[in-house]
Length: 266
Image (tube, helix red, strand yellow):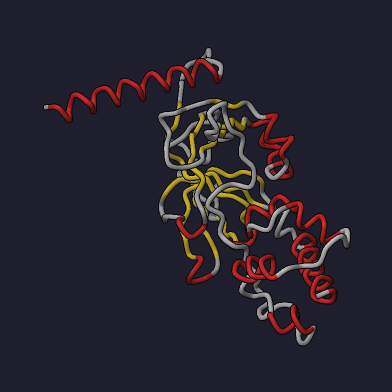
């Protein structure tokens, strides 16, 4: 299995060189192959086993089995290598009860998010909030930068988003899109991955023609997508800090839940 191990490592390093994975932690999230296993393989401390091969091949169907096992032909069946879908983001943090925290990414932090979204230290440095009302998913908060989504969202609004795998992207819905080239974008997405291999991003602000053109993105250029499910827009000159805003949002959600309980009993 020594030659197979070498080709497996070659494939792994190919993914890194193309920016398709960030590191061994990212690879673990996408395939289920542990970070420690990848490290041991790269350091030649072990040989690749059938479970590792199965997990990798099941996620990367463009990887040629004949090349991997026998060294014949090309590494890839197709040049259009796509990433396996993730149902969870690369890195999350949890509260004392083991539940995912809701991390807050403001405009300043957004500058480092592109390089740090898969870095545990960077993720751990982000402000974290517990919002037990948000269930069935992983959530993150982002600060809106600019006016491209006006009037739906204003500059410095906060959008609360649920992580979305690319197979579940719904057209004409607002998302925070983490891209390789353009960083974080808050846009309305139109899913054409199956038809054209692309997702098109549109701005809601049409006050000035052609100021915000349509952005076509290849699926492999998208690192993460977060579907906007809630927004906070305190349109006052003296803006509240984020913790006060979160407390206010918790109170609103609690009141809505209480109203729903009364409605159910009527």
